Image (tube, rainbow, N blue to C red; front, side):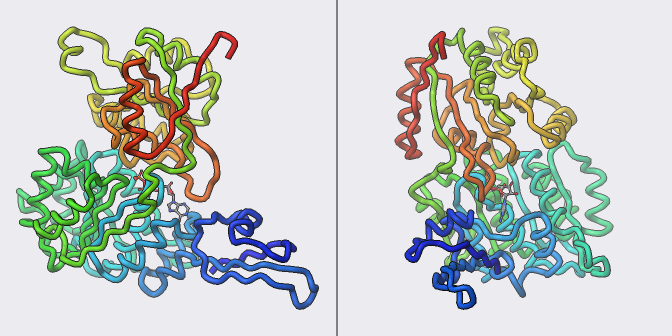
Length: 456
Ligand SMILES: Nc1ncnc2c1ncn2[C@@H]1O[C@H](COP(=O)(O)OP(=O)(O)OP(=O)(O)O)[C@@H](O)[C@H]1O
């Protein structure tokens, strides 16, 4: 429990004002709120008692994991954690839908730590992710939570976490799985299926199955096919708790219906839907610049110098087949080369796209984690990527769908208790304005036009 005492507020004070004084967010869960004169001094005092993660998880999540979470800085729950953890810890299947950057990962990882038995050497929790990069990120948060905090050196109840990802060393993982199965596996579907088909891994000991970015997985025909098989043939809803997470689940009622009908979840699956009327984080400001195709690089450079982002992601679309056939340079490389030649700011310029080999992708990722940079990326970086330093997003190419817009935009504004405003800028042609307008209607946000003149 966190107690925050505010200095002498006025006699009548609203909870929102109190939150401002105490720098608690109005959305912070409030347990008791009292406001009255301090007995000793006679001065008016106010006390907010906010539910902490510990309050919600105590006796369910091991003490050393909670302590680690606190050491990392996870003390107060975010809204999605406050709403979902009671459901998750009660053992119910759950569809977890909340804005990007809202903390869904910690919610399902705390559930996993509550459900596994570290003394049993068997795969007990499985997290499925769409990309290698997201898998590395989730595995790293899980490892951070599993590490022994100071004072807990004697605890022998730690667990092992395996990242079974595309481009990984599957031979080594095979030996590891046979010799001493880890308790938690974070996997991409194709690597996982290879292990299942070769009978190296069995899922009959699984107690928790999480599918992160679930809408993305079902949207891809190949991944969707694997996923259906995994949910119904390789493991069963009877013995596992199933969690589906994403910031976007289009037609969620239909999806919930399918979950029950197709036996992907139990009948009493709970839909935790946070901020249902506001799909995008409110700390994001959206703007667009109308310009010709040939002016885009110049406009981007101008904006980068003017905005001076702490870190930024510049999203480009995958190269079309037509442009490949014409022998054009992919958008990503064009932007990268132009920035390398002309950007004179303090940030390093990096590239992340699907066609890079896994080693180059890993190198880019570890550079990114080291500090602020300008990342030129395709939608591969659009899902789940957590680089909290990112203050600016640029859509060099407009995304194809509103869902892609939501996930790209959501790579900024990823500090749950911060009021920092981040900016999403789309560079569009006159003809694309109506597409962006459609995204605005679908995602309920407003995009301001930014007019650049020679004097701006
Ligand atoms: N309780 C908390 N207190 C402080 N920071 C938190 C808390 N929970 C999560 N975070 C931080 O919030 C950021 C976003 O969390 P996370 O990556 O889980 O978001 P998400 O909901 O999965 O987003 P996306 O839908 O984009 O994948 C991370 O940097 C994480 O460390």
